[in-house]
Length: 227
Image (cartoon, rainbow, N blue to C red; front, side, top):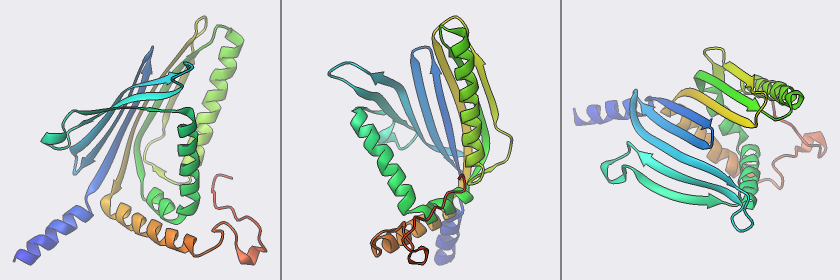
């Protein structure tokens, strides 16, 4: 009986539905990012980045932010951690993310293919002092976001059509942004994807260059479905 109960609990955990809720807002000079995780529709974690300041001062160039953890465990509630990234560190993080994507593409693709976007809403207001430039930037931003979503749709499923609203704000310098997204998957898919990532890393390390294929005579192979 004890073994059966343990087995049922493990199955319930492994196949638990996960929901990642993302909110990103910029209103005036205030920035806010909220990320929360629901397991069986119960919120188990919420991370808040209550401000994100781009610093351009001579001695403080970079990205400054304050992270607050909520809804984890009583000993961790409202735990705050202030940090700052330099621009060089940001560039290195982006470079590492791209390298990670290339190296572990099989496992990452598996996880993305088993992800469903339940909701994606983006609204923005863009304003420059020049009306013509405002119109051009607004149109370019709209085209860029739609291109990104078209690319993303080849990796992940959208249950509903994303809602995009970008409005020009003529006559003043302004940029406001609001993004709300709900992403759903299951813990089992993340476990399997993590296992594939581990196998991919081991396979990558056994080759002199994971991006070259002997059958292609040393030519670079591409795997992106957004080419």
